Image (cartoon, rainbow, N blue to C red):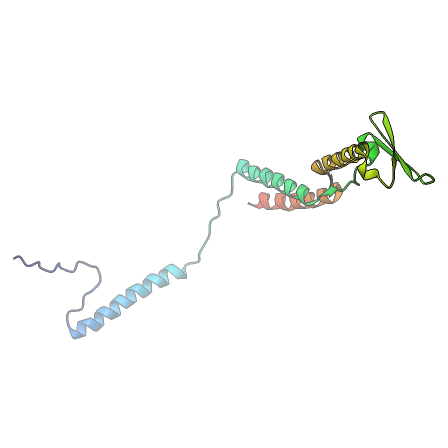
Length: 170
């Protein structure tokens, strides 16, 4: 069985050999580390910033400009609420005669007089009201929107000025 010999200490630090040399070794090692920190932190730290190249700068500017425009457009866009579809929009005409309490319903060139009390039982009246309802639902499926352009453009141009200032400083 072979015994391994301990490796010799090849570190640049002094080693403690005796009681007296131990104190000297600690003192020297402490001064060495202390001088390392003092030298590193005494010098004034200077940060060098690398400026972005012009094509990259303006690419960032254009991308942020487009993103801000799209965001502001979505922020300043409101749905326009239309009233429920009128019968005339659906090609239906409904008139009411208060003296007789009768309605005249006209659709696709055909007319029918319907009593107010039994309007729900008339198939023609049901077809006419269903058509008006379908046109109203179509309006809901395709909502219109309104963009508040002046406010949006003012905010966007303000952002552009600030962004342009920042990009020229980078």
